[in-house]
Amino acid sequence: MKKSYRFFCVSLLILLQAQLAHSLNTQERYFSNLFLSREPLVQIAPDGRLIVTVETKETCHGGEAFFGVIPDAAELPIPFYRWSAKLESLQPNQLEFSFDLKELTGKRVDINLIKDVKWQNIPYRLSLFGDELHTFDRNFGFVIDDAGNYFRIPAIEEGPFVDIVTPTSAVLSWDFDHAVRGALTITEQAAIPFSIQDTHHEIIVSDLQPNHEYSYHISWETSYGSLKTRTYHFRTAPASGSDKAFRFAVFSDTRATIGQGDRSTEHVNTLALRQLTGIAYHQNADFIIIAGDLVSGYISDPAEIALQFRAFKRVAGAVGAYIPIYEGLGNHDLPCRFIGKKMEDGFIPRLGKEAGESVFAAHFVNPENGPEPALPDHSPYKENVYSFDWGSAHLVSLNNDYMKKSSNAGTEDKIGYRNGWITAEQLDWLVKDLRDARDRGLKQLFVYLHEPAFPNGGHVKDSMWWDGKIPEMVTMRNCFWKILSDHNVCAVFCGHEHNFSLTLIDDSIAPSFTNPVWQVVTGGGGAPFYSQNSETPWAHNVEYFYPLTHLCLVDVDGDDVILHLIADDGAVLKTFNLTDK
Image (cartoon, rainbow, N blue to C red; front, top):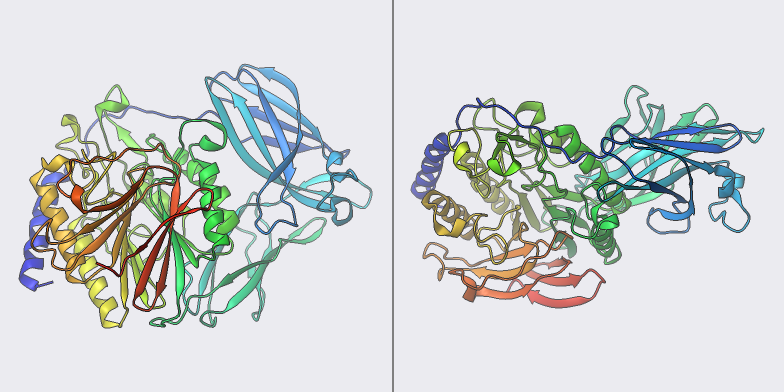
């Protein structure tokens, strides 16, 4: 990009940001979707009788509890439910279920040989009936001692995950339900101990070889001996600049949809998330990108968003233990400060440790090489704006729901930005990041963010367009796209619209877009579908549209980039050559 044009864009955006971000001085209205008043209480008697006590914030009219195992024979660690519990008592805000753990060791059903190994990490599901069906997935560990007595033991409740995989390193993370002492063991390396002081663990593993497969497991100490997980594996990235072919998966918008049950498990469409990540794994994707709206959100309490992120991770972890998942942040992934009597009356962003960006960074592991905030009291870009290399390609995550506020009249003088806005510091950082990638000789550049620059169905009235009625938004969008065009970016992946569309953005849209760039909307992660809008100024540039659940598999092989549109049953719907512009 020419320095004079870049200076104009960034200077203009800084001025616009100063007009958009103002002081935080208003009363708050609290909104919540919580159904449980606390986490379920699991108690195990020595004779194997298990009691699960559930307390609810709203009146509960009944419910069911199901227990199962994660079969050792399954390639991916996914729960299979086999037994129902007995509802022992029901009060308006409390339920109690009972189950006999000895049922797990029956000769006809003991597929994990629990009777012999004497311990197990047990998944269970709660289906609770309030005004609607509420579904919760949890797990716990137990052991059988030499005398045949049953006791609860610490268990991994999230993970493990493999993240930030480079040619020579990776980050492994997991969470226990109680603090324990243990170790991470990786092939060709000495065991790495972890502290008893914490339940959350992140360990950087270094001195690895490029494009090499490693196996690992986690072990921990209990009062009844040492235990360990199944053996997982991951592959390091190719050497930077390598022409070795690779494949990645990309989709977004895994938040809940209509239908309840698996389609709305703690505000996540866990059915679609499990299907799509499973397809990515079995189709040999090297990594997965999920470009925002992981959960339904739009509530007040940061702790409630955290619970939704944990529900997402419980499902994503089955694949995330083997291949890295790079998460982006979307408009639904944020707790808000609501400033009216109704949610529709408007909201502004939470700040500091309560900011959506801060909560996001606390629950996901992504690179930390993004820009610094413009002001000390602004939210961090840590782990929501970042970039990484993979072989011959460079990939960039941006956040155009940063410090999001609603567009209501009552929020005009309040801190925050309307959705779709990319801040000046992000754009300035993007220019340097893409230039550095080109200087390193990387052939293919990709960018992903949540809201499309050129929406095609469902969000034409917002995103980075707003029906063309906000001149400063259009100016910012064009500055952003010119940066992409000037650096010859191959494709931009986004979501927000719950469908697929492939659009070539070129100089027929704006004369400054001299190098065409593909926009790929891949919002088919399970949120409610949207139809196509054929009245946008770029509708003639839309190559293909599909409204249902899907993911994209992208093959990069030297100069060639091929995109496969995949349905949720694994069928290949369409294949596109993104090199052909």
